[in-house]
Image (cartoon, rainbow, N blue to C red; front, side):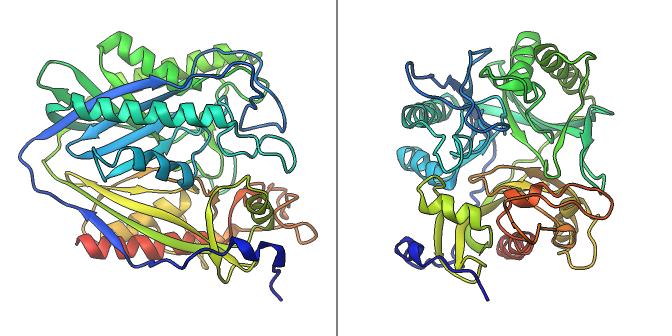
Length: 440
């Protein structure tokens, strides 16, 4: 029998049309690119919780401020925010303020574990960790950066390349599957300036959990290093980081700041060592779709009832009696297909290490529609938590989604407690297939 929370019935929202797909596909002869970034101001005299590790831990200083970085490509705006995650609720607020500039706005999180809580999950048990003033500052910084990037756009050439980062990452959960490449879209702007979009799969937590100072972690340091060495501006977007794909500890004994600096330096060197760039043809297609998925996680549902989690829910067939509403997108840039994932997807669901009971890999789906080059832009337009392979999804029967379970090998199935349901992988696959059919 399904668990149902009768006290949550007022949360029912109007039904939505899941089959509506918006497509941006305007032919053009030249790329036009623009960039801007803004620091997210930290309000004084406020209770501010650090996100990503411990409950109810207030910030204890500032190493460097979080930023919102924006890249406009023709009439599409991509915003990357130094944060642990941004819910679709706030993405919609940002879009509304940019409606006069673009109706094609996409918002990403760098998954910064040294940033101020933007999801509300680190304020203590059943306490909202978000700070209204900080969230307003985040929205303002994002909108202002986006507007300036739109106004700054100039004719550009676009190049794509990548480099293997060798042994910089590790996968903390079986099966060991991850993409070790760092990818770069580099715009040569007609005025001599440059813009780089960097795509890499590694949790932004090189400072680890002993750090209580605000920072953009290795992402911010890497942006600054590339700017210093090349004068190019940088926007960073995460890849497939589910299963806790992260960077290794590079110093012993461990020191958070030293480790962050070395991580950023090594990643920067790999980026600047890219030598296989190719010119990207002038093609930009973006398709976006709203979708619903089962909400089985009863902890998430309680947090929704308390107003901590902002995601939209409707009556549905999830174990809580509800489904959640989110969105997903695909981008075609030249001959490269990019999946925009609203969370942290396990790499095996992308690259093919799937088992019986799992959907086909996203790469194989792309191949069916003629795309051989595939990238993942993670934490895109929402943060739904981990997308775990159903064949490897395991809960603790006595306290599902509350306590973690260990399997017969001793593997700790922590990620399931921060996932919506084992059905999420199928929901994503099914709806991405609809998007690819639409644009093919």
